[in-house]
Length: 161
Image (tube, rainbow, N blue to C red):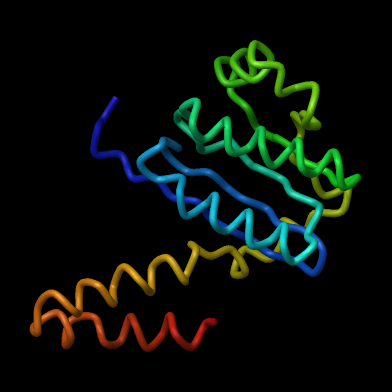
């Protein structure tokens, strides 16, 4: 496996639900922003989550633990947590850890839409813009030349808030 593989969490927020498309590897090195986002959405009383794993090449125990914590919280709130598009290996891991008892496993992505998640508006999918905004602001702080390089990016991301 290529160690330079990019990992990204794409988010699609609807009125009452959140979809997370995981692309690449989800590891302890890149899941803290996802955890912060999920905690923020829970505080906003969002109780419907769907994680799409079709493009996920791997996930470590830290990320699975974050998702397990979310699933536990959602169960106590009467919420819903769906995992869709799991590879055979990831499905085996989810079952081995007992996560399948806490989340709804959905093989067919069309069924995700049947339970109320909207996948059609691809333009609504975004990388967590707040995370990107802070990263680019830090780059601007460490080098005066970066202010010019990234001013348009920061301006655009700021307007998306």
